[in-house]
Image (cartoon, rainbow, N blue to C red):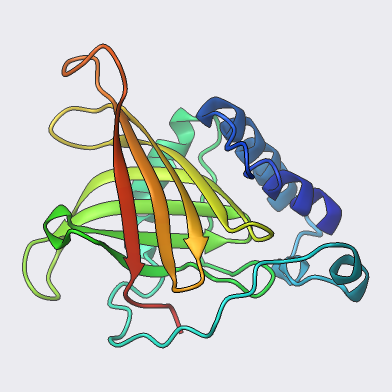
Length: 212
């Protein structure tokens, strides 16, 4: 099963497959995760796999502030509604890293005015909640919700999702994890009410907290 997990994660690589293609592999992972013998211990590589496959090496992350959201469980009901639109409402209730890398925690945009994003990781499966904080440490308003995949061999992430306001539209987030715990890539928004073509913007997310 570990080989199958790696194969699923590997589709997010140098070529950055289309969102629809990645969505198909998200469903394949969910089918694996729902099997009775599935366990998060599978997210740790065996010596045999390490001998054959190189993985991204990240330095330890030291969060300057605690994770206020504790794994983002409060967003699970909304994420389940989104996931149902993509074919399977399953969303993990808890988080777990993959092969020594755990993205779970708060990330802020390089331009602080653009708000923040909370990532939830369960092996190769990733949820992203883009939000605005109403006040310091107070409630947050999700702007978009997404689900996607993470490839630990090249640090690539691709997420498909939908905005929640002011009107629903499809979004894609594509990024690569850099050694300084920054996700750098692009965010594409397709809203037929605004434009007939996708609008793509550069995206830089800087890690702020980690779940520990």
